[in-house]
Length: 156
Image (cartoon, rainbow, N blue to C red):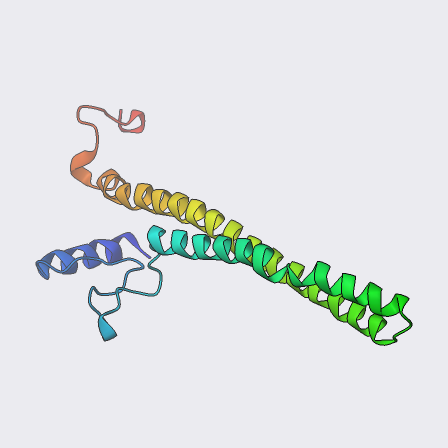
């Protein structure tokens, strides 16, 4: 973009009065009353993390109960010569494996929500600091901002 074009765009924006530049933001109360796709609420993230953690705890307390009982029953059936004992042991092993996978997923969700809260907090601070420096950058290109009384050595 040429300097003249930049100056023209600034003049047009100033002439439009209260119209302001908007960066990466949806109009408030846009379609369907949503605020925008990128909104992240720390309370929502904490809620998801808490629910994943609660589910992990409940799975351990309530779903894991079946494994030792099933393994004991499988051992008794096998020792009595029933082939069903091996099948029941297989089911108990699969249950335990699937339960551990589900518990790992809950732990992953919980940890990811903590990480997401941290990242978004950092992103918000980064964007805020960069956007607030745009006005200072714009001043640097204003002719009135140039230091007074300094002469260019080439002019002497």
